Amino acid sequence: MDTIFYENSALPVYIKTESIRERSTHSEIAHYHDSFELILINNGRILCQTDADVFELHSGDVCFINRKHMHSLRPLVGEECCHKVLIVGMSLLSANAPLYERFVRPMLDDNRFAHIRFAGSDSPSAEIAAIIHRMEQIQNAKESGYELEVFSQLLRLLRQLYLAYTGKDPIPTADANAAVQQRMAEYIYKNYSGPIKLDDIAAAGNVSRSQCTKLFNIYTRLSPVAFLNHHRLEVSLEMLRRTGSSVAEIAQNCGFSDQSYFSRLFQRQFGCTPLSYRKSGRKGAERGKKAVANNN
Image 1 (tube, one colour):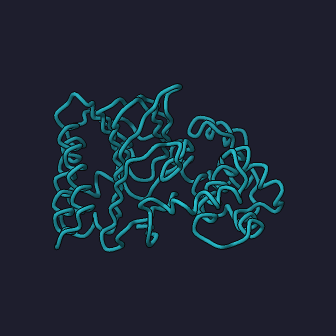
Image 2 (cartoon, one colour):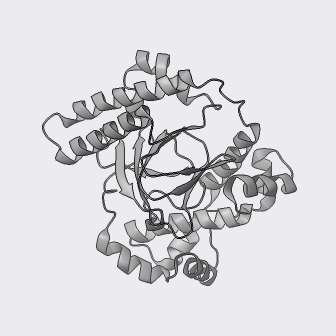
C-alpha cells in the first residue's frame, strides 16, 4: 500500500498534476491506496489497469479507482501526457459518521465497484473535473476557513460518485482473484524489509507457487520477485529523498542484504546511482508532498 504525504494532516487531501515518469505518487508499478482515487487526464492518453481490467483514458476523461484495488498507469508509446490526481484520506471521508455509513461506506466497501470511467464527453466528467479544479484552487489559496470549503466540494464530489455507483447497472461480480492478489501484495508491503521467498508470498494468498506467479503476471505484469524488488526500490527513493541514512543503511532497510546488488538494480531501474539520485532529488524536495505522512 502506497503512503500518501498530505500537506495538511488536518485536511488529508492530495491534489497534484503529475507525470508518471516523475515517480511522485504513481509509477508504472501496480499498487493500491487505502482511500479512493480520482484521475483526471489533462492531455494525452494513458493506459490504466485496475485489477485485471486494462483500458485507455483520454484527455478530459476522469477515472474513479476504489480503495484497495491494485492499479497502475502507463503512457502509451510515444505519448506525452499528464494527469491530475485526487486522493482523500479516510479520516476526512468518515468525518460525518451518519452520511458516511449511509452513502460512502457501502460504495467504498463494495469490491465489485473497482473502478468507473467517466468519458470526457459526458456531463458527470465535466462536473467532477470542475470540482477537482475548484478544490485545488481553494487549497492553493489557503484563505481563512478554506478547509470548510474544500470539505463542501468533497461532499459534491461524493454525491457524483454515489450517483454513478447506484446507476451502474449491473455491477459486475467481484473478482475473487483480485482479493488474493491484494493479500499477496499487502504481505510484500508489510514485510519488504526482511527476507521474502516466493513460498512466503504464495502462502499469503493461500495459493501455489505457480498460481502466485500467474496472478502477479495478470495483475502487475511482473513476477512476484520482480514486484518485490520494484517495491523495495520505490521505497528506497523515499529514503534517499527524506533521510540522511547511508546508501548501505537504506539498502539494508529495504531488504537488500548486498549493497552492490541494490545499486545495480537501482541503476538499471532509474538510470542513475543512488547517490546521484539523492543529489538531484534534494534540489526539488518533494514538490508539494511535504509534511506529515498519513495512512488514513
